[in-house]
Image 1 (tube, helix red, strand yellow):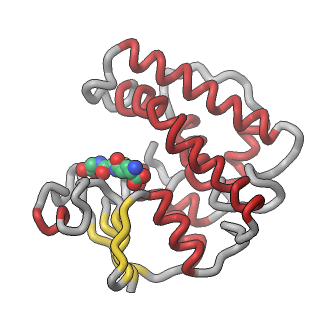
Image 2 (cartoon, helix red, strand yellow):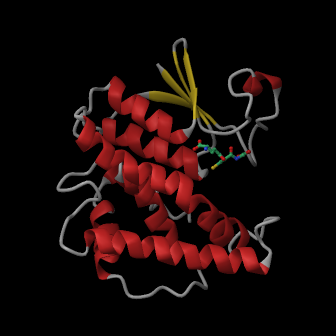
Length: 208
Ligand SMILES: N[C@@H](CCC(=O)N[C@@H](CS)C(=O)NCC(=O)O)C(=O)O
């Protein structure tokens, strides 16, 4: 049985919960992280010395890094509709995943950890303002990608490209006190994702 370590309210854990739901895979979950068992405990650090959640345990396989776990699960289940095998099609999916991981993380830290939760050091006014501006710019990139009528980021079908980005979109529409320019394709994308039961269960579930 797959085991997922991590609290259900953590951004990086929710992405994995969403995919597990999409795949209909049975799993056990242990709630580790802020507000639950501290990841500084030796039992956790033995699995992930970085002390971050999520961690996925699949028999002898122990993995950290949410996007690696997403790719692992899709490959394990041979879910090529979510992560194609052909290099070019696969790259079109992965470019959106890497964009979120590399380019959008600081935006989210400023806008959410600083602007919403008031956590140090992100609550510094310049970090909040910068985070919100970069977040808006990022949402504009999704608006532009989908503005021609393409339903999902990698094309006609839902793929792993939509999981990290789909979470960002949810958080964007959940943030208070943020100026949101009109982005009709982004709004339609949010509603399209919301038709998915696993998205409603783990992402658009009342938590920001
Ligand atoms: N790059 C890592 C980042 C993991 C990460 O920062 N996780 C946060 C939760 S979203 C964490 O472990 N926070 C510490 C805690 O909850 O105690 C990934 O994608 O999995």
